[in-house]
Image (cartoon, rainbow, N blue to C red; front, side, top):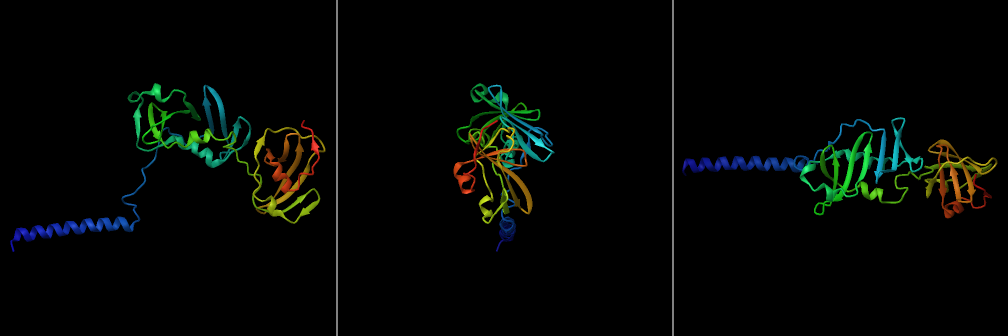
Length: 261
């Protein structure tokens, strides 16, 4: 056999073995070599935002403030506990992948006709229309236009309390309504309200105390039946509105109606 042909075959075999080994390593590493997610970068150098504002037509429609550098609270349109995961969706606007354009490269007058503006501290973002092919939304910030997953606008278009944490209780181990212990403490576990109402001063002598133990910690609530429905006041400073059906299942439907202050 010709040496050059023999040598060529040997070189080809070595190259093929190297390729097979590389592919095998990729499979064994569960795709980590070839399927790494696109690294996300930040638009503005924000270390930790403490305020969030959403504006439409130059009006503030939604606002949040960070409490004690830990929890986000809604401040506009009403003060309310915030769902941290949904607030995180707003914060993630500061992240982007690889797709962006200079502002001069796109017809901004058509894309940003009625933009919704998001402010994280002093950093500003404008949400435009959806790119029809990728279904990603145009976001203008820092003299660039980015294409991002369309997650913020659907949340803003949902119910008015979409960002409010309506959970009143966690896992309840024991409960006492007034002076009467209840055997079915599980009825009060993971209680969810239908809304949070603006805080109002309570009339003296109205309502009934509800003392419970949840996650091995005591919690005191006050249940009141007002002209606007059944309200649970919590130690966290917020008033939660219950549905009539929930109030009935909890045994609160017999409360006398107290006039609103």
